[in-house]
Amino acid sequence: MARRTAKLFDLMIKNTLKEASSVAITHLINGLYKKNYPLDSTQTTFEPTEFVKENPESGQLESIISDMVITLSCGEQKDTFLIEAQISDNANLVLRIFNYSVFAALEKKFISKDGSYMRIDMPSPVVIYWETSKTKDFVTIEINFPGKKKVVYKVPTFKVLEHSISELGNIALLLPFYILKIRAELKKSGANSEKRQELAKRLEGYLVEISEELKNCHANNYITERDLAILMDKLSKLNSELYGRYKGFSEVDMRLEKLAESKVAKAYDEAVARGEARGEARGEAKGEAKGISKGIAQGLLKAAKAMKASGEAMSKIMRYTGLSRREIMAL
Image 1: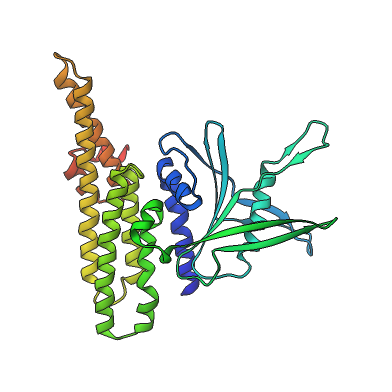
Image 2: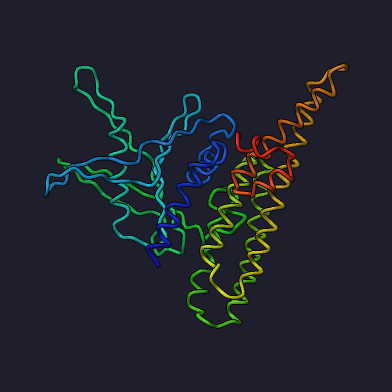
């Protein structure tokens, strides 16, 4: 079960980042690494994460796979980051991260024309721990070279559950994972129905708070409408996977479903409003009606994309947007 849960979170964070906008990814990197990349003009690139090496004992080629390697660039500012996510402590993880970093750096090595000079640029690492970790805020590796020269390699850690939901608003893509907060207690409580009811109530409170924080992030342009829909969908799926089998949590599921629906509907309304505004701005005295109509159509298409990305039923998207099945399928 523990292995299955770890795999679930590994896949979930990878999918979340791969589906997220550049704005949301930049916001995440800024929050994790205390950077100041502009959200609206930074380019994000996912670097290769599978590297091939030779096993020193067998001589066979084998692959090693890191979680995520992302490069951010804006003008002359450019950095590469290596993000690993872990549900529990692992003493050898930092050594693996150093190994991943070396391979990632070698992928972009610089060699002078005459071969007399080479340079590799190591990515900035971080480990995200989903549940409470005993690992220190920094884990250090001291690398000793001949001639008594040494390099200190530090890997910072970020422990999600040691932060409040409002603090995680600075790292919006991690917000859905906060519902792990009650998992350990729920597993310990066993069949105690009174404890389950208490935890279900706490979970419901977390879901409302996370939903509101995501709404604030969207209002502040830290995430896009599509990001909002994606994150509400991830929140729903995580809740179902972690707590769907426990008695007394059905009301939480219904509350989350209403929250998700309201957020998608809100994103739809805002998209239409912006479409109208753009249409009005472009419309001249004689062509104003045409401009508004075009703006509304663009708003509807944008909202439909967000709803489709969140996994909403086709009938629901058609009802909210008025688009045909064929139009929605083509998005």
